[in-house]
Image (cartoon, rainbow, N blue to C red; front, top):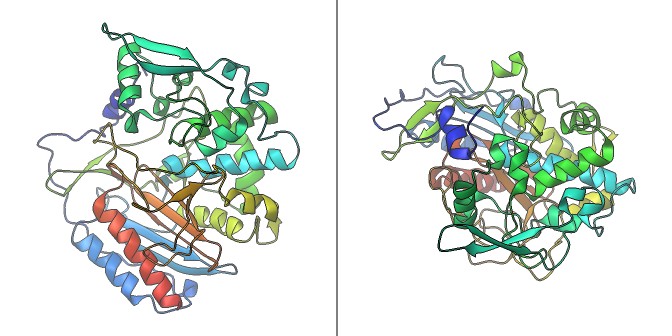
Length: 427
């Protein structure tokens, strides 16, 4: 592809809102909740999800939850494909975007367990291209970027915790301007030129979400001498039975991909094609993966059970515990202000409350508003997929949609309703 920015890349896929686009037919509800996966009264969740399809909150959604020993809830509602009329299923394929990061973190932690990576090492020990990072200070009067050498080296720990100084243009006016001025490709193009991005602050100075986990993906590849596609398949997906997960999507999975939609200003949906680059220059460890609700729940159950799922160990218990522990010290996770509203609203999972970051999850330090315990971990994907894992109550849950912009108010509210209904039912 000749495009070199996220905007042009996604526009080619039809993701930008099209003026005057025809309205989508009202989705028809299709409930396929698995009675075998239920251990409580989840009628309130079923009703909320059903209503969300009927009132246009979503065209379709899958909600799923599990405890240590079994699935607790699986509910599929609405349409997976609004053109063919195919209904949502637990093996419907979703593009994960940033929910891919959890796989990349797991791969890195496996190599740390093996002594092949030390989180306190300079990242340049493994990736020499990180040896001389530059910080973007601003722009000259003629628009030329003004750069200076970073005050300190980037540690592996900085990359794992989003304290490296690398950011995302979606939530950075400065990096958006830098891309426009220099022609640097956005990370979503899966072009290596995106790694020429400067830092926005010195390593370790603050937390800010960005392309750090894409660098971790490069690190895993360098140390393991395998591509992420192969490493994930051999060390995470195959052991967990995740047969519908990866970066390079096959024809069988393509036939089950959920339709992507843009939310129009009138609240309706505009469907559009979406696919992550399938001839990438690099495998995007920060957001290039696809999976299904059933596959992803196998991964979350592994974390919930201290690194083991169905007798197969992927991580040690102490490793999983470290991933769920504050790894940014006195720094705090903060609200992300949008620089590109077509792709994301501004967002903060816990406004007005301190929250921390582990390897590589958001950690609420106070009990969540919808039931989760203090010390739970969570994160999301740009197309409005969300998950949380509560190590105290021993429950994990997720919802899956394919919709922009991110942090859609209606979907976030539905996510909260699902979490609240789940805890109420289990109580």
